[in-house]
Image (cartoon, rainbow, N blue to C red; front, top):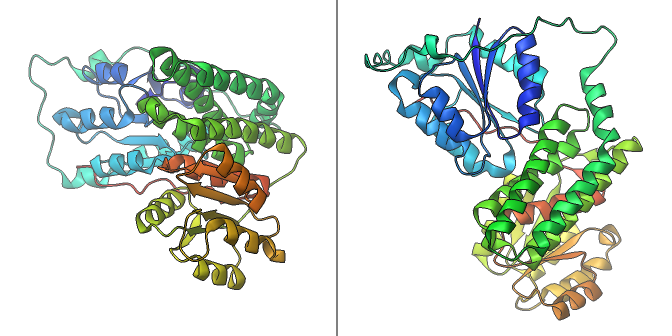
Length: 416
């Protein structure tokens, strides 16, 4: 019987995946954090590890470094669960060495089982090339003897008339209103907590865990856009846990909008409305080349299709020649400033309702009022938090019933 180790900081997700994989015939052990995973792996060797990358304190990347640094675990197959909006973690994991990567927004127990079956059925290429791992020292515990015993339930025959994804989707929608209410309460707790203190960090962790659960739960349903939106939500919260000093009025407005957007997605799903899936195009206009490059990188990580220019007059020509789904504008630019460019944009029939977001160092009330009068929909303050920018754009695409197709997981790197 093959032994699996599941590592995730959400107890409900662990239980759901453990039960389904156990029923499939695996012997499953679980770890709810990175420290517990390292402790288990220090005395036992499973046949495969399924590893969440985003965990507070000790991340999945840290656990992966531990695995590849231990000679007896160096060739251990690892599948990581990630989301595309934390590409830095995904790329780092691929560089260290993984055998598979799955997006939480697209994963489900049945999808994961298929990936595990396929991986265990073939000999990993890296293991064929690598020399045999050194034997463990005599003082080391024998891995097989130390693997924790797990009571494996009898395999359950799948129902012929029940679609697990549809059932999971029905349960998700049933609790959608309560979910949105909980998210709003958690946001209020973060917003009202004293800045940069332990209480705010605890609230952020609770907030993150709730959204983390939503991402994984929605991924097992037909409502992939709920999972996709919650994935960027989760990624932003994860970054804020690590850097709570980045919480400012702009970030708080973004978090509040993400709560509203999640509630809107539940409403659309209950009304059987679907979003239009296509490659969303974004025009970035900023006379600062560094700011332009940063915005373009953030948007590409969110699987959007950005184009940028440092010249506002060139931007006007591009708007006349091509069609963009969202426009990001700096305000202070030579020649034609962002406010005037937005006014001209609004006179074009094709852009009467296109979302326009200002990306500016001026985030005061007066600037917000001027941007609204010019026809803009939103404003984000510089210096930008890249994941916040991606979240803003995705939310405005959602309101326009346009979302990009679910992105691909990071490419798998070599084992060593």
